[in-house]
Image 1 (cartoon, protein in one colour):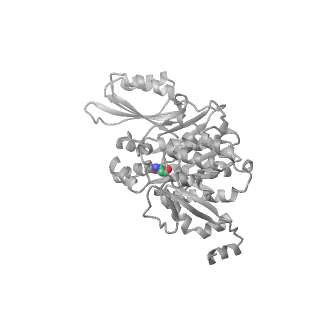
Image 2 (cartoon, helix red, strand yellow):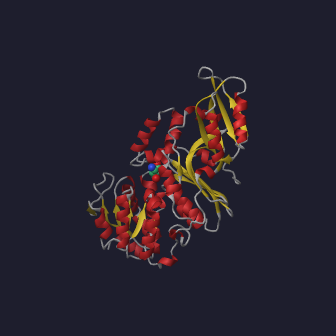
Image 3 (cartoon, protein in one colour):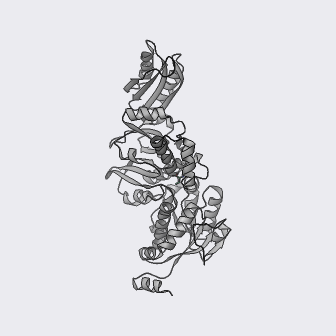
Length: 452
Ligand code: HSE
């Protein structure tokens, strides 16, 4: 026994280690390996026992990791079946192989830690059912917002509350792109390439820019917030690729910032679950979250608004969450399964509580920013206002800019809150007007105040 472990034993650390199998040695896998190795003593003191890497399964070694003395296999399923592994850490990403790997590990009685939001959002109900039957832990803090402990906060710290809404910047790549495009006037493609090089982007970066990655994370947050099964297929997603410099400038002049938000709200009719570009007032904390940083605001009926901020992607920030889950596993391993915190915070929801449906997008209620290009002649504004009034849409602000394209003038409108179905119909009618050129730009507006 090394001097190091003797010292830990003297400090009351149980020397029976928790044996970890790391599957995947990419950005997050490499970060997890290095954090677990570098901070081993500190982690052992916190866990009350050492957490040791028993085996690594990876298609190739990582130049960022010193694997000397570590058992390495090219077959991740070997790790899932290894009798000397207590917990597998799934960091290979993607849907199918990850699902098969996790189910295989569970069937062998292993606990699972994963950073895979796609896996949990899409296959989580099935995985939790299998895990409950086997009495094993599945932990996924790193799946949402990288290093920010928002799952633990929502599931445990806010357990007293009826959650009313949550809104977050939950894709670091998208926020990085929006920030650098605005601040440095760089192109979308240029900043995306940089985010990929830094290891922030998904293997398929359209997941980042089209809102799919954020919808995976929002699906998980909403389940934990309201106690409903995971229903990724019902989430609405709209990406950031159609945001123009012109809209960013108009929003700025009106006192707003455009952010790509995941929003979920509890209403009497059901639960809103949507990801889209959103205008938010510049003085809100979320409007000041820049670069790869993520932040989630959660409104609880008892606590009021709370905000969780930090690095949403990257090797060691995400590893921080993975290792925190390993600490929980190390502490809970001996606890009878029924006394552990439920996977999705509420007992029994995996079986399917459909009493609170996810609302179709036409039924959500929000405010809107509209930009139209209109022919500059008498009566056009009146016709626009009539169409909105007939749909029961109230105008909050209206600005007509100087002509930019021949005789056409941009008209910028902010509306009060209305049903999306009414707005869809109004936009359909506006686009059919002979005096309106091209499509109407629509960006939703959220004030994110305490009552919203
Ligand atoms: N691609 C993700 C992001 C990584 O940019 O936020 C973390 O989930």
